[in-house]
Amino acid sequence: MCETGKIKVAFSALLQKGGAYGPFDKDTTLAYNKVHTNTGDAYNSCTGIFTAPVAGVYYFTFFYHAGGHHASELHLFKNCEMIVRSSDHKTGSDNADNGGNAAVLQLQQGDQVYVRMLAQKHVWAADNSTSFSGFLLS
Image 1: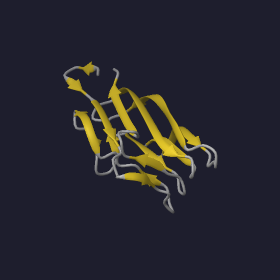
Image 2: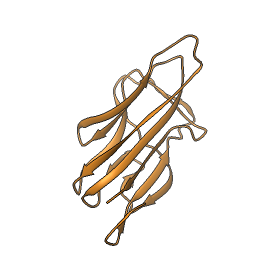
Image 3: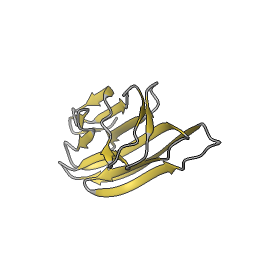
């Protein structure tokens, strides 16, 4: 966690929805609902959206666990722009998949960052397996 002036910003949250989550008919912004840290109150666990309280350089990361019986695909967005993604194909011989990605982003105050799961994809939303975190670098 970095300090810029007197502002500290950092969050870490898990997706805890009781097990298999998805597939859904449309793209879904993931609302990571078990929040471990939310210094600066910039992450909203109801919407899954991080809103930059100050301009600066931020680091974001997301990880997921999923069963191999459905495909998995998550995208990290800045506002409406897809920045990075992680995915795995459906397979009959692979019982579990794991993936993730990270990005360093220059944000302006009010910019929003969030993770979307594409339509017809899924993740495992239990057992502290699927996470989203970020913090202000400078």
